[in-house]
Each structure stands twice: as C-alpha cells, then as structure tokens.
Image 1 (cartoon, rainbow, N blue to C red):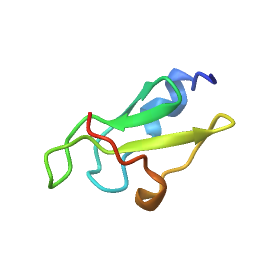
Image 2: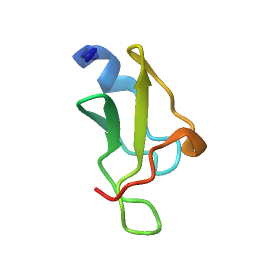
Image 3: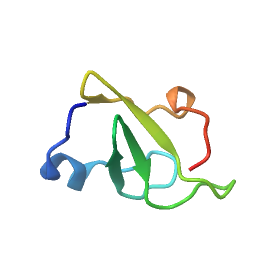
Image 4: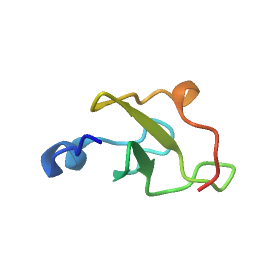
Length: 61
C-alpha cells in the first residue's frame, strides 16, 4: 500500500463533489457524499490516484 503525502492530499479534490479526499488503504475517499448519498471512492494504481468516476470501485462506504 502506497501512502500519499499530506501535501498531495491537501491539493487533491474529488472531481465529482469537489471535496477533499482522504486515503483509506489503497483508495481515496471523498469527504462529502455524492448525489446518491455515498462517498465516492477512487483506486490507487501503484500509488497513483485514478480520479475517474468510471474507475471508482462500486461499493458503499
């Protein structure tokens, strides 16, 4: 599991909600839920954030 630096997490935003992201294991999670009421999750691919909604895992948080 790659840990992102605090500086990088400070500037990353969820492209769906515009909210800051927090790291949860090998995923980044929006701090504000989307229109369905669930946080948006994005995978980390070898430590690189993949901030595409279509690439987000489909599970409820």
